[in-house]
Length: 290
Image 1 (cartoon, rainbow, N blue to C red):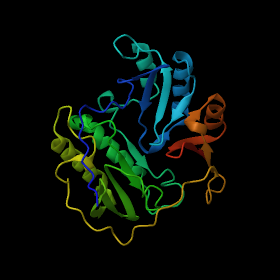
Image 2 (image 1 turned 45 degrees about the vertical axis):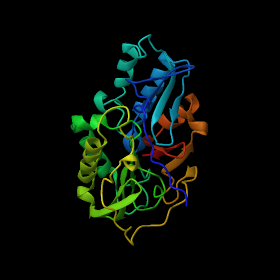
Image 3 (image 1 turned 30 degrees about the vertical axis):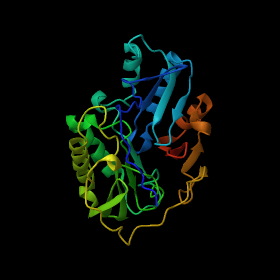
């Protein structure tokens, strides 16, 4: 049997953000983290307005981590976006804390609290995001560090993560730490536990170009592994595009082909009676109608 050698880093991660754009061939690429994929129609429309006003690509793009991207933006000789572009993006409300913009990678079962699932993870997501934003030290998490929260339906059970949880019932969850299962905890305490584990990772990884990006890369495990709880659901299939079953026609999973949300799709997602949008990890957007 072969043994997999641990990953050894020689530099910090280069995941893009608004304040750390990626200099692509067509201009600056920026990524905006939207915890749980939740974005208001007004914020999405405003972000599209930034793309139209400043970019050579007037589309918004969605990622498999349920985040948003803009491409082909202007970039200065210092490798940064012009100040007016940063200001326009900040005005959308999607850049709440510049010092933590790279670390809010929180992937959540998209339909949680709307249809199905064992628990509503929206309050957990909000508390986790607030905990990350409140701690200056957690601004040092790598840009590829990922939290994955499955509400018990199993749609994200097979997604790899650095930290996460799976709901076992309406009030209980089992924590995930890298590829290992950890404690079973009350759901009301889960976000705080994940924040503390993130702090432990920051302390354990150290600093410098060889610091690990992921929990699995630590030389010493962050926790002692525990068995998976018997109440865990089986993995669920990918959510299909189209009207969501059991939503009484109020929720549509709209495909963003190749991850592109163009002007026509923006109009569809932000018009009429659409009250809420949730970007999904399957290159789609849930449109929740009032």
